[in-house]
Length: 390
Image (tube, rainbow, N blue to C red; front, top):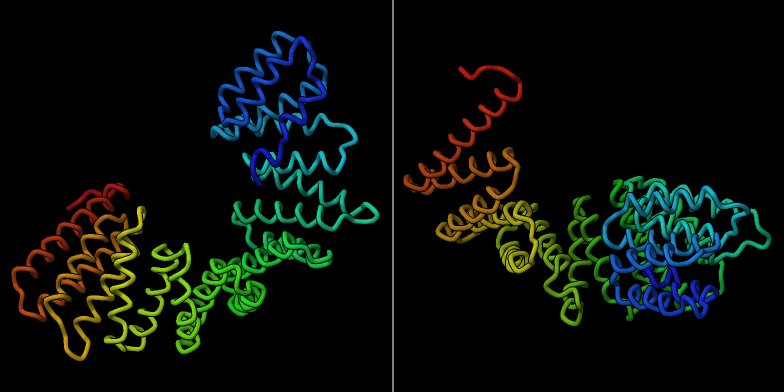
């Protein structure tokens, strides 16, 4: 939800415009619409100095200030304003509570959780219950819990929101929310290793996605494939990946992270079954995409290089020259990470490879790296424990 959707500044300030202040109010509205949030904060401060403000106008200006603080990364100031205003409110309406909950979500997930919990309690005590209002409140609660990494609670609230959305007459925007929540629940069940539940929700996502939601369908296919792969059900995993691959051609996800992940998953499925020749082209595709991503993970790419090199070394017609080059690529990437254990294992495998292929020079190079790293690791351990190095 955008800032404009949460707080309709022009509408909220309209009731307070008069001949004396209309120019200043219009400047505040215009600056807010342009996203000039520091300017808005200075203008609301000047407005208070130049004009008497009623309690309701003061509240509106404070909510505007809180929104601006959130937008420029000053979450603590924003949360303090929202918390004080919320505590001072008397006879809160459901709409007011939801407004405060949405504003709090922009700056403080714990505060958003507290306020939106009040909202759902009030909504569920009303007759009749506003199903869509309840659904949207539970959605914010779920998102707050998810951001706080309270995944079981997030699942609980997303499921309640889903129930309310499903009870309403189907409209397009509600259908999209039902689709989104099935995907979200699938992802969260996967994160807490409830694989069967995750697959069930993602299968339902595929049914709901139809032909008009390609991106969410691709993500679901790849996610299901990963879960079947984790269960060593490679045939099922590959079936979902094979369905996903042609969909990337016409998708905005082409050559993005999920595309690389799909190739990596297919490659690993073959790798894990010692089908090295089949794995090689998928590793090549995965690496090519990863390296073009602006913020690719050196750790991920390093591990892919290691598996790719091993496949090249062990396929039916080994390519030791190319394998050696990719072991070296792997070390280069893994050295960028802060993972000494991973680097130690990668160096050991690389040394073993160059020893087996009789490349004494390369073997010595990586042995020296291994010794240096081991000495630095030992020195760090000595300093960390207060034990003197011998």
